[in-house]
Image (cartoon, rainbow, N blue to C red; front, side, top):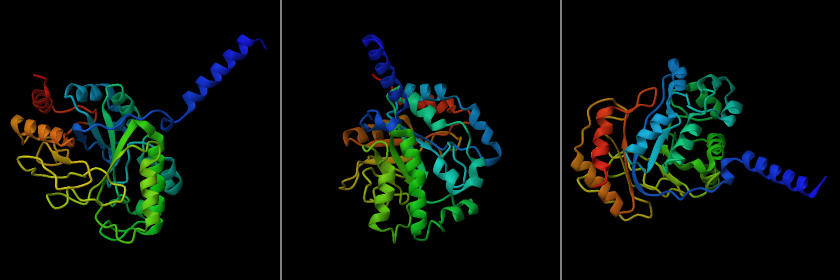
Length: 312
């Protein structure tokens, strides 16, 4: 074999190895504070096929037009359905595979966002899907109002780790909902959960939501938490967080409730003030906005946000 051929083979091997490496091995951009959007995307179990209609490019382009810095995307909520495959879940709960599509929508969205400089934060309940008894049993969980069993902590950590490693540098954070009862989680249990959330990219925002309102939006509910969960249905006129080691974050729906297609309840002036306050505090302000099954936002909502974020 000639020297030139040897060099070519080595180069080819290097390129193939780089292509095969998971996203974990690639450089992760540092998450940046700013204005973002959350979407509660999850067709019901009778319409899981709707996921194939999701137009990723149009969705990502609209987010870019609104000048968002980050997106919080629901992988799933409490129905037992998720918008992406998960190898750990297939092993733990084989019969639940019908509730996950073959299309990996978060992977497609993450890539589209990365090309536009927008960070992806993944949303997942802190507990097993409370509306799916079979999955709760196979994962070893109980009511989210009760302490989580050790068996569940281990199982759920493996599920989180699978997605964390799968999305690697595409995922700039996790937002865990329903962190209502953490009594009894041992230091080893927290290490499993926190390690799973950081797998694939150590520099992630991690938020654990203990509930809504002034008393809880800024609470630290996990040892590895570094971002306020921020849930606040009626934010104060100016955003200021209590003294905290956590990054300031306020999350509120643009309409009357989460994911509801309805008129906006805030004025452009209110939104400008909150976005400016968050910027001053080097924090995040996030609006939950409804989308349809194809990933399209309400045109009036988009027009409002664009009027707020337009450069002078």
